[in-house]
Amino acid sequence: MESDDAAFAFAALGQATRLDLLRALLDAGPTGLAAGDLAARLGVPSSTLSFHLRALDQAGLVAATRQGRSLIYAARLARLRGLLAFLADACCGGQPDRCGDLGRMLDTFTRDDKIMPMFNVLFLCTHNSARSIMAEAILTRFFPGRFAAFSAGSEPSPGGPLPEVLSLLKTLGHDVSGLRSKSWSDFTGPGAPRMDFVLTLCDTLQGQACPDFGATTITGAWPLPDPKKFSGGVAERATLLNEVYAGLRRRLEAFASLPIASLDRLALKARVDELADPHAVVRA
Image 1 (cartoon, one colour):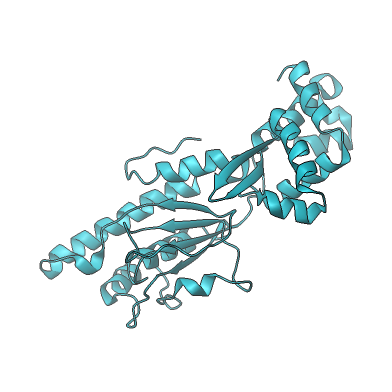
Image 2 (cartoon, rainbow, N blue to C red; image 1 turned 135 degrees about the vertical axis):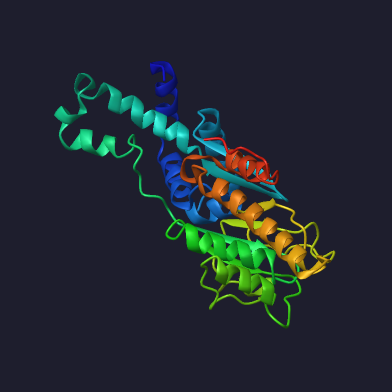
């Protein structure tokens, strides 16, 4: 980063409201906050907020994406990390260990072994009996501490998850004791957990539009064949079910490898959409 570029970014931060804005967006994480929520949180008029957001945007410190009628703002974490690295590189002539507490503080922003935040992920399909159940089980088992996984459907199956799905998951070492078919209405309303990601695993949800999970939720569609519609004998159905499981696991491994905490909202949405292609190669 050049000195002029860094000076421009630091100058944009030289105002109290802008600092409060950036701190609020950092608190929200990569999924960001809607402009209206920002105005309410900071107690500033919308016109004033727009003025300061524009200055931060021009300095490359925030980015906006449109979701429905809302503009969602998120801090550009890579840009901020670059500013801190710019300071750290100059510390004590390139020997930050000589800078005492300042060097150690800056080092926490430049090293790779950062603590990873936990994100809530909701998987949807019509009956919440197969694909979304498998996705919940995979993310829960293989990425504990990184993600809290949930699943639901527009018309949850009265009989619960498909027995052959539960049998496959048990065979592969998953704990199925907590898996059940749930309505997506369980995840809406003021008492519901805030979802960072909502991923739809079927082409359509019986013609129904998804409910509003909040303007800052990042959504994606990863279409997969419906196991309830598989035909053929037992062996053929088992093969197809294994293929769905394998396809989901590949996608979720790629999803989990994304540097979520360091991507801005626009880049994160693009990466999630790329994973709709089962052969997609995740980019760092």
